[in-house]
Length: 134
Image (cartoon, rainbow, N blue to C red; front, side, top):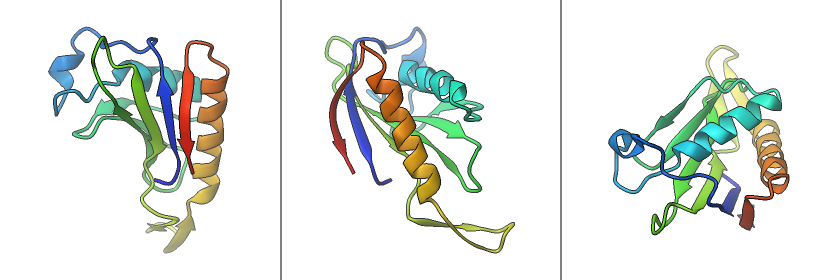
């Protein structure tokens, strides 16, 4: 996880039944996960599912030769969760690939995902990019 995109929007409310799916209270973001799954799919990503984790929401991406996806963390839920932080789910610059029996550089996938998420958020008038940390 290298880059974090902090966004703010009322576009991603708590969905009906979402509270019952949560592993930990307050970890909302299912609407944003579905939005990113669809938007990234339009950009050529294979995003087969989203799921709730103990830390937030995960958007699975099958395009890389290692476990890869978007992590979504929610902020305050006062009046609905309007603040979110999105990042890639990669834990380092290299990942071991058993099929290729070598380490794989993660930066080509991580950099492309970051650029695509920024483009998605910048193109949406209902989403404010609050901060970006690289």
